[in-house]
Length: 117
Image 1 (cartoon, rainbow, N blue to C red):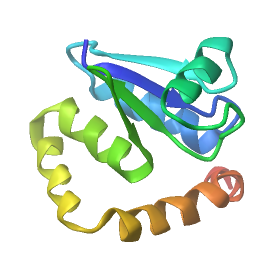
Image 2: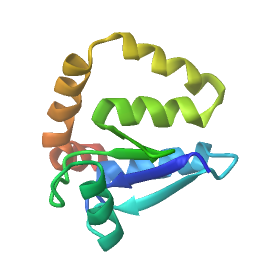
Image 3: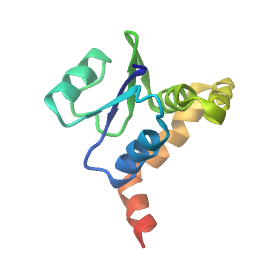
């Protein structure tokens, strides 16, 4: 088991990310937990976040909690294959990566609506 991915289960974009990961997870090493669930709220607190923090993804692995862009890069790296190359983007400072992550997160419901059109 690589780790647990916490995601906003009420977000179409977030659910599509879960499907993306699941389809490529040949080893079945990821577990998914909705942020809105009791376990999700508990894991948010363990990550040092408020339990109503729904604009983020958390990747919990081996006692460590990766947040936002770092979580996404960690997940992609653990998918294996060519995806292992993407964590090279960690050379970009977290503040810059997370600026863009938050921009997408704030607009995720609107972005998902446009994708269905």
